Image 1 (spheres, helix red, strand yellow):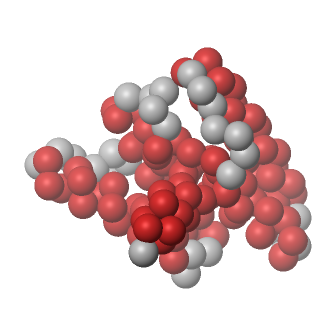
Image 2 (cartoon, rainbow, N blue to C red):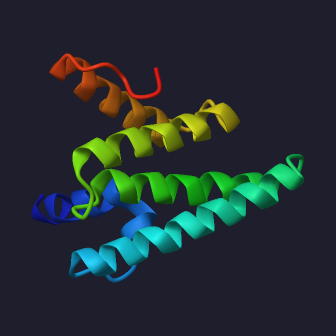
Length: 123
């Protein structure tokens, strides 16, 4: 049971943070910039050839990794990370409506906004 408790945070954070974790805000922001670049490159490649299944998978994975990293980043304030990660999760769900983790994370952010009585970012 202790092993499951120790591994649970890693499972929730996922592949975005599978590498050596950043030790400060500067490293964290550099990691986010790297993930943003990977996401942008994968998006461009996919939209050039949206019929290619490998490009679609790479785009979804890169976008999910970036969204997840933003959502849990200690270097970003909530007013930045939640709207930005929600936007990316919604982007994933437009391409793959059955992406379970994107659905779950988007729903969590929506619930947080509703529980606070705040309007949803992006409508």
